[in-house]
Length: 145
Image (cartoon, rainbow, N blue to C red; front, side, top):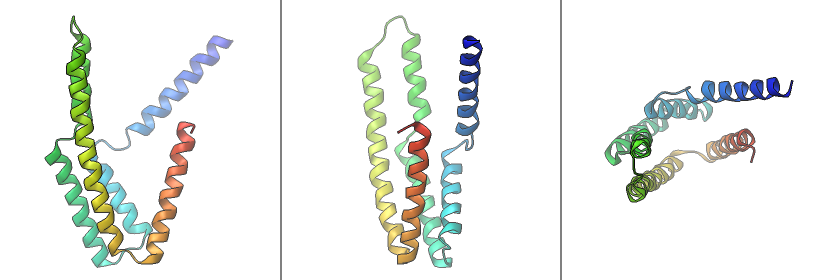
């Protein structure tokens, strides 16, 4: 009976991960979804929507420029694991390079957040803060933090 329960639990968790992780196939789809939600939830006017669209395109372009690709880094690590000898230095280089790219992207994204902040009215900023707080709370609850 205990074995069946464990199998069902693992199956349920796996199914949950698979169904939630595949909602968006690409970075661009995630960015599009977020900007669409922001536009509707914050009731943006036409000028604000134009500014948000420009920011969206800037973020997508910067990701491509930086070459941020988590999947490629993981493929390189997996290739190292398959080899007869494991090159720790190579794996460290892969992760260091990936982290540097993520740091660049984070700094750029924060600049874009500041740019978006300037086009929002005070009540929209409050609404955005509330949405972010709600999202953050959901994520913590989901991951058990």
